[in-house]
Image 1 (cartoon, rainbow, N blue to C red):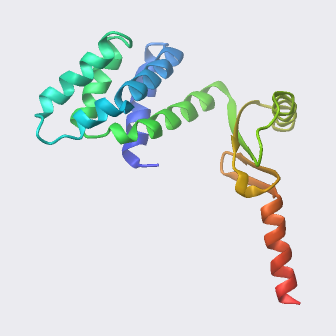
Image 2: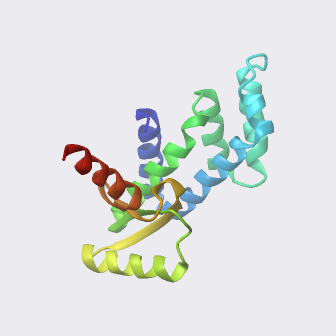
Length: 176
């Protein structure tokens, strides 16, 4: 993740914490991302023929109706700094900071096929017991792992995928 995204996220998080508006700011960040990521908006923000103040004004117009003054200011700031591509990174880092403050840990479970909700709930509960912390579990689908599960918790990765096991078997057979 870009250093700029971390700096923006930290500044926003500190402001949100001071205002006791962590959840509201999480929602604002998503609104800013959604508004600035629209294809028609991106064509305006990427067009060097349009003066920067006009691009910022366009961002403000997009955000005013739905997101509120704070989101408008953030949108204008990101457009002016040419940082709209960092919004996903800002959201990710902001969520990590909010989770850390709340004593939560984020985990990502990647499977070859969509995980059933009951299985995801069971995994979340098991991880919460093992880690003695509330776990926020995101699930992703990556057919290339063939089967099994790849679990990422912070910096730790537990790879129990069929693809990795096959790769390990190939290495052992090649070494024999």
